[in-house]
Length: 372
Image 1 (cartoon, rainbow, N blue to C red):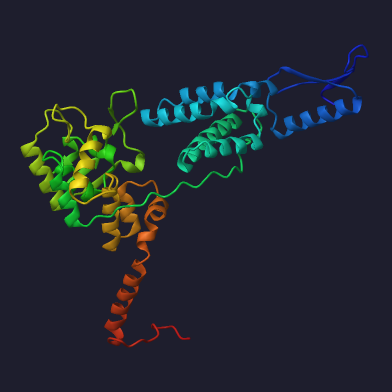
Image 2 (cartoon, one colour):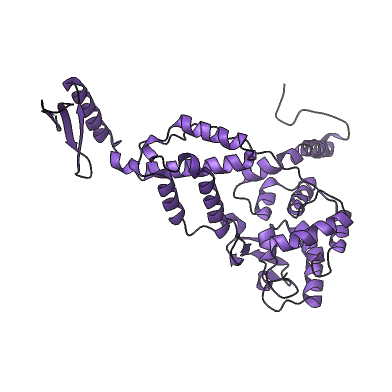
């Protein structure tokens, strides 16, 4: 045996088992009985052989300390994401903040989730918070601080899906007209391009090619509480995309840039020339909504409206995914699949039209080469 077992009769637990870990440091534990020392030593050596050994001391770091380290190790993320991570950290540190990583249990995490739920937090907030806890524990496994994550198998609450408000073209025009003149074009462009709020607020004049009818999504306005808004990269790599503009959007840009030419490079700004912040514009938006299409109607509903229009027009989900800047076609289907249910009727009608060119209207025949 590569470890040793020493008998020390003068000690309360006389049998001490010892071995050296992968880091070269000696690990030891004392027992009342020799057989228990032998079992422990065999189990530890087996972990070494299987590559499953972790230094027990590495898991002694408190969760709150380690969570702060994980946040500090992700400076490449957006300021808003980092702020969300910190809020999740603060939300649960009272429950597990001083618990060592190696002593956090699955049961403890279930109780934590129950406490958050009964404490009045929305399912979306509980799920987001617990995802952060699970992320830190998964990182601890990768850092070999713990052997496995106690968050594995934890079932998070399913967020409530926010109801979409889908507008028609007349309603979009009414809403654009109700907004102050310098912002009416923003509503039109949002509905006819599907841009996210940050992409609209961070849009630069250099991102618009009127001659080629192209809009290049290359920046997004990033806002975090207590900080000045800054231009950053879009939400993901897939969000960096090129959108072909319909004529109505080009006309909206033409009017806006002619009548409200910004002093800087950003297309839509405040009257003072600053970035158009979500909170400031939100007040203007709600007033215009009340005067035109009526509540509820969020700015993001114009993005949903754009997607719904494309689906109704029979556009392929892959094309919709690309235009919206979703990371995968599955995201598009998960978000808008319920709007696609009626498309199967359109498909059947197209198939009937194809068959009519061969068989004549209303005549059904087996396709060539097939028989039943």
